[in-house]
Image 1: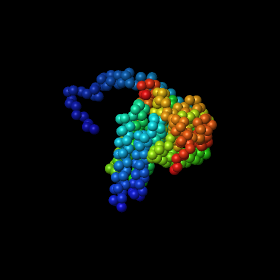
Image 2: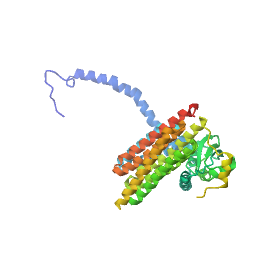
Image 3: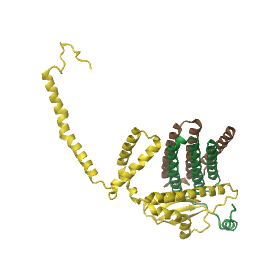
Image 4: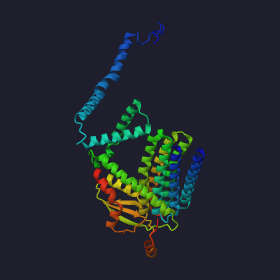
Length: 227
Length: 109
Length: 92
């Protein structure tokens, strides 16, 4: 800092004690008093609430906290995959951004409650993924055969499939799996019935045959980790 | 490694081509959605796997893209199918004569 | 060795180009609106995949981000068009 370069004939307000007092009064009235009166209590209440929140943290029984933690974890993993490096600054920023995004979208996270959190859950997810990948490969080879053969062997029909899954998330995952597997395409979901377009409806178009042929193998695995 | 990655890329591109071919050959909207979505999804996954073999350092970002395609592609096709269904498009079905012929002579693989 | 890689790349290029041409044909000729939307959806996924391939060819990972954003925007567009046409009977 430079020391004092103001000329003596124009005294600066810092040198004049009267003006200095006036300035201090103004600052008191304009900044400090409102801050103490209005803003400080808000901060205090906010931090108090935060402390209370942390005191009664209980992921097992409080659905709101569980939603928040799960969403933050998933978003953080996606962030790490996107950034691709493991430096400390990236990790800290990722946690902050993930927590903030989860906080902003906390009103729309109710679907997380439909997952059944158990220790064996990753195993069930892996088993389900294995079934899914095999079905995906079979679907594509089947579709390639149909497209390439000159007779175009299709026998399409709209059929209905019944599902045991209750929650919207379970129905969504089941519908996605059905869409990506051999010769079937989910058209609409009404209650616990899924309308499915089936490209080779030879086993029969009634409810039981279609359910057994299309949805059962997925449902058995999905029910283990989703309601 | 590069050769294996390139072979995977060619397989993926072939599936993309098959998907587009199915899009042209199939007789109605629902069948076109089926042919289009499935083959194109697997094709792009195979292509991404091939690129991951050529550039192993890009694996995390390729994984994000693959998961994204895997989640959004069936949702998109289902929502188009639902739109077509609600707009009143009837699905193409075989006539009884064609169906009898189809059932009597199953397509040999 | 490298000549084999070159032929494989040519083959992939021919396949992707053929896929884009067939998709464009369906996009232009599709008799109904959902047909065109399906063609646009398929073309979007093909474009995403070929952007990734382009990133590999040009050795520049910035195209991966472009592919991701393009895929997201195309998905939003397809959903928006589908929601628009689902009530209207002009889609036939």
